[in-house]
Length: 483
Image 1 (cartoon, one colour):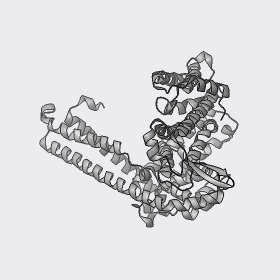
Image 2: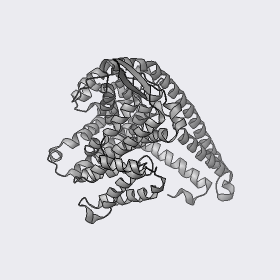
Image 3: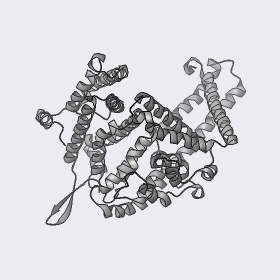
Image 4: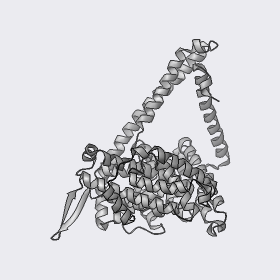
């Protein structure tokens, strides 16, 4: 129903009616599942199907590929919604009493570690505001989970792995803008009630009083929630700040690229494709590692590994996962681009940080030099060049899945995070434009529709691109995308 057709009273009435209907529907569903004792068995069954539907006999023979992708997407969406429902409505004690251990989920039920930790997330929350008695200590299982991976990492940090999977987005980020926007909407609804007599003369005084009390209650709860979330964020940051020394000590055992690869292999890449919220969480967590000034942890190297992983990941993702990967890249590139555009912000947040150091060896002695602003700008330009090459290679591919996934990721990036330079914008636009006509490819109408949408956005943002010197354009063209 169109809320805009009614006056203030009509809008408020619909607001409360929708909230009441959702609450009653959730309570009825949970009651039916509780009586049949299917709450967690259903969750685990959906998780198994989500992980296993891509390994059916048909999928392995590359038959009915679109159906397999559709089935995975439907299972993934169902899993996300149902897991969120249980996390919000099911008491933690009941969750804990019936949920198998992480190792049982992996070894007996056949889930991969990332999916197992996803369904157990309500029990793993280790924020200071959570009850310690109701939580599962992931540190007890982290070492075995790492060993159970198809390719166990050579360098590992059990404490960082447990910390990463025990936190959620609202533990490390509070969306201040969203809280303020929602507060403004509620205050506007209160103001609308003042004009109710003029707009809706039939509204009764007792109804107006009821609606006013309800909205005022929502405002109070929203303010209390904001304060609670902000306090929890500060406590989590203090907790992580006290732990970061142990992460670097474990890192020293491996050295080189081993530790950044461990973070991407076991933490970032498995989780960033699970959901849109997890994609944002992974981007925020990487920035949090940097802002905590974690000793001996190279921010530059981690982000470089993220960028160079995009090409191989495009081909190996489902449509749903590709969309979440695009969200993760958009959040990550927004921060990287912001540092590149503003020298003052770079100097404040990056200059002299342990994550922005170049290590060189002179006469057998390691020497660290801070990465300067000009050096970082050159690094950012190189990352965008690598992304340009990855996307152009995918868009030139003869595999429809690779082309579709590349367009899906670009739909999250174009107009904001990528492209940022005119030379790379032109290369991507040239490939996308070829796909806007059915006669130029054999991938179907869905590819054409996506390409036309992205091409229109590329055209609209063309004027905001950073101009690249002709000498550099010629160098990039001659290099053919070399690293």
